[in-house]
Length: 152
Image 1 (cartoon, rainbow, N blue to C red):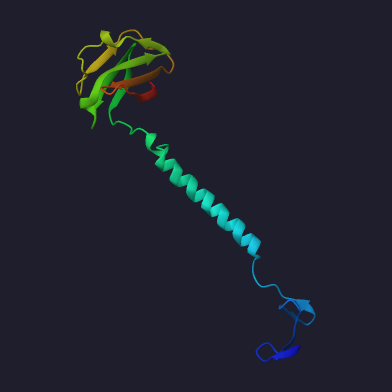
Image 2 (cartoon, one colour; image 1 turned 60 degrees about the vertical axis):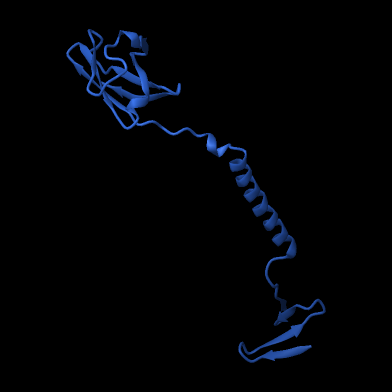
């Protein structure tokens, strides 16, 4: 069956399958039902995965970073670490320092628990080059967090 499209001024023919041809070429009408089903299943799987992650607590196991700070500086042959504290200063049990990849016992530091402005001087620890200083705070809940990792 032929009909004339007055808007496009083209001749159309209705095919046996219900589609139409324009000047001998068949037109397709959108995506197939199979593609639609596959897309819907994919969306459902992603959505179920996200919901399961939150329901099982996988996403909730991230711990909040604590906010405290320290500073290190080299003065002559000495390295000085100064405690600056911060929002979570009241939760700090102690801190320890690693110089040149060597752990320094925290019980040798004065002023525990640490107080803001407290400085610890490590005599004759500085070298002529850059010295690697790492300060780690240990909190009352048992968590440990690196709060300074620098070269002086």
